[in-house]
Image 1 (cartoon, protein in one colour):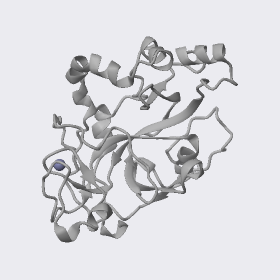
Image 2 (cartoon, rainbow, N blue to C red; image 1 turned 90 degrees about the vertical axis):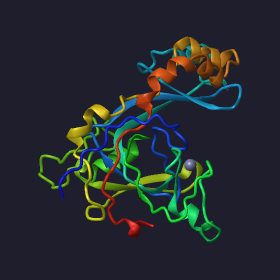
Image 3 (cartoon, rainbow, N blue to C red; image 1 turned 180 degrees about the vertical axis):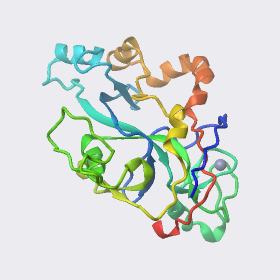
Image 4 (tube, protein in one colour; image 1 turned 30 degrees about the horizontal axis):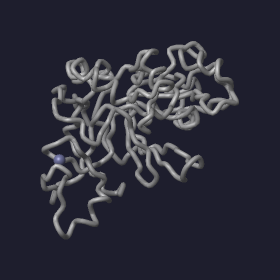
Length: 280
Ligand SMILES: [Zn+2]
């Protein structure tokens, strides 16, 4: 099957319930096509602002950022110490079959809608979704997770030592010539378990879906990673120490963001709908 070039039309619609990051929830398997050979890794902090919203901050350099500096001041035993997490991220084409609203930017899991099927189903925005068939999302999104998932993905083409942190996680075939190049196959990512006990794991889906995108064609459409490095050090410290909320900061910058936000809506549209009913 020939590669299909994704539609590069920029969306000006609201982002709805879909954001840049792939969500991994239990029982909701996602299907992705990896678009890069090597994931990006970085250190990331998560904390709650005074309004209770989660805010993340990507360190521009390990142990060399305002939160690390503050951590050294408050000490490891302090309740306000914020631990950095080693995150891995990669651009993927989200091929998960979803029911998409034609009017707004919301999309729904087919299973979630089945229950309401009898009485007719509609989107949050009021648009009817009755009779709308699931199709691959076709959005370029970011798969972000710990090293373990990425090693498990890499192991589909070649094994890599779990404790070897000096070598990047490679998603290309090893020198032993194993056949799979991961950017050429749709993968299913499965999450099981709850809370801190969750396990995410990949499964190759070699024949279930047709490949729809040539990764080489959309390199310039990819999100630049790490993409969540949005706040200045002053803003971060104001949120952590002075009770300034994330939404205070965002609304103050709203005008600016509106001009540049276009790139945040994802642009790839898959024009071929493979038969994926077997997945649900
Ligand atoms: Zn809608």
